[in-house]
Length: 61
Image (tube, rainbow, N blue to C red; front, side):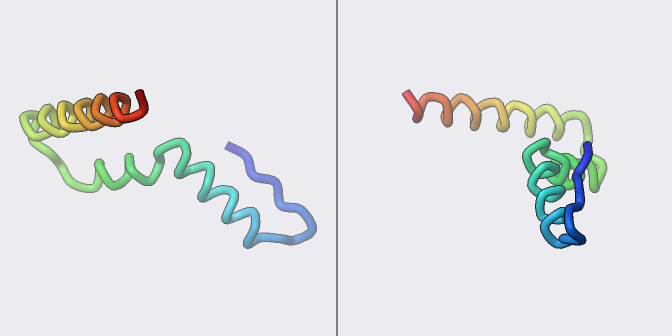
């Protein structure tokens, strides 16, 4: 991932970097990996995430 700093606008470059990282799911991934989850808990989270995606998709139709 690359962010270009133009005219010493470091704040803008940091903002752009954060936006890109958020879009890629970096922060949510770090939050998930912060603590160890047992395999059974991981499976339940995965199923809940899939159900949430399904509900979201159904709302758009």
